[in-house]
Amino acid sequence: MGQGVSGTLFSWFCEQHNLDFIVIDNVPANSPSKTAAGLINPVTGRRVVTVWMDDIIIPFAENTYRQIGTKLGIEAISKMDIVDFFPNPFMKESFLKKMSQQAPYISLSKDEHYWNEHFNYEFGTGIIEPAYIVHLQQLLPAWRQYLITHNKFINQVFDFNKLVVSDYGVQYENIEADAVIFCDGVEGNANPYFSLLPFALNKGEAIIIEAPALPGGHIYKKSMTLVPFGEPGIFWAGTNYIWDFDDDLPTDAFRKYTEQNLSNWLKVPFKITDHKAAVRPATVERRPFVGMHPVYRNAGILNGMGTKGCSLAPYFAWQLVQHLVLQTPIEKEADVARHTRILSRTQP
Image (cartoon, rainbow, N blue to C red):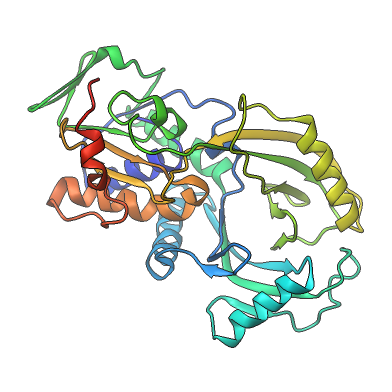
């Protein structure tokens, strides 16, 4: 259930393993998958820390998206670098310290003044590479169309009242199956089978700008991130994490703040063309939820990817399918079995 990033990747690997499946979803316009930049960044945070399981997850993700793109006849992923504009001397010092420790993925720009024509900046730039952009705006609709064409997609709101999970399998309306897998994103927080899990939902916003004079082929990062977004000259601008929010709608405060920041940072003209917002399915532990329910063993979950959905979903979707087919173990830190005590109290 669900055809965001996780549901798309899970159904892809079901297809690769010749499993019989059907996807049920009615993807809303402001789902995180349709709002996200699709960025895969190998380092994170002000301390320039390498992301969890980078040596496994990132190559696996790149290979998977390229395979899907080939299957669908689209460019599903692009490799590029991140130009990291140091906002202050302390951030530059932190970057240099990591370089002195021979940290992977990072280097200094060969010419600190290279971007003077396009940006205002004082403390130089670093380079993070390789980074990737997953073209979700093309990938998700293309895979959905593939599913529709092959009679593997039902466009409707999932109704838990129609679901029966037993020791022998599951039934939903006239569909009988061995298992149901929930890839329901933020809705997982209200899923009667998995709502007890420690989700930590957060809201993100982004604006879309036209900046035709800004060179493509790079991701730009300072107090926010600028990501090429679809057509040439179009960029996604965002970065915020809001933990206390009333709804999933765009806010005037974010738009004004971002517009002011861009005006201070960019030397080239830009025009705002859209403003997006969505709530992300993050978790307290910053680790995903992957696996089968300890009590309702034919109900499973692939969720909780947070801001790292594009990088984490391919590997853990594959692990979950492998687990279902071959009973192979799931990565311990991601396995939902770590919350067996909590989930044992579930009463759908």
